[in-house]
Length: 94
Image (tube, rainbow, N blue to C red):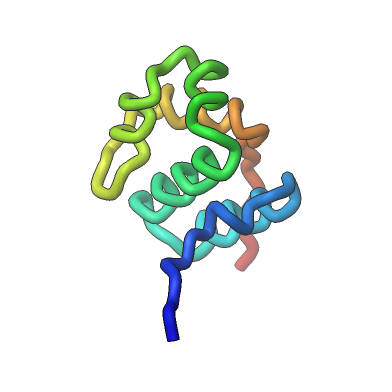
């Protein structure tokens, strides 16, 4: 039996799924997980499109969103805007 590698980007095919995925990672993951998730979302939309919308090069995007990367906040905000997301703050409940 042949198996293929699981790619989450293959399943991020609408805005609701993307939002659900990123919110779950934000709630349960750490900084590295969030950066990786944003990279998955960017790949699902298309790195060329994201590069065009952010004004960044594709290689810079891949580097900024790779495992272990520590991109600047400005980069994260540009990519979030390009993928159709935003940051919203809600008060924590006890």
